[in-house]
View 1 (cartoon, rainbow, N blue to C red):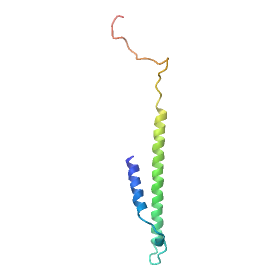
View 2: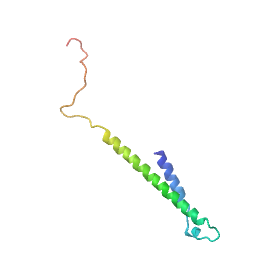
View 3: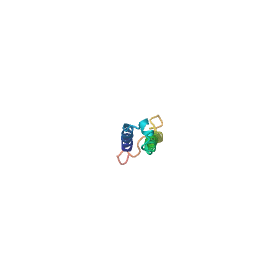
View 4: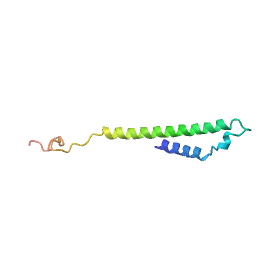
Amino acid sequence: MRLLIITSLCLAAIAATPASASAQVQQTNPNAANRSMETGGQLRALRQEQTTQSNTLRMDIQRNQAATPAPNTGPNAIGPTGGTGVIGR
């Protein structure tokens, strides 16, 4: 759960940095388009990682719920075993 919170904070930090269209067409800086695409790629990778972690966590919860047997409380339920504690009866 802590990892999901950290990933969410990273996504918010990257989303807060604007990748404007003007950065992609700067004639004086040929690497601006590459940096913009790199930032977009990192954002998509973080979103995918967060989705994967969320799906894995959900699947683990569902698996644990499915593996927990329901208590037998019907008429055929076996009560506690052992004697009465009284010897000779």
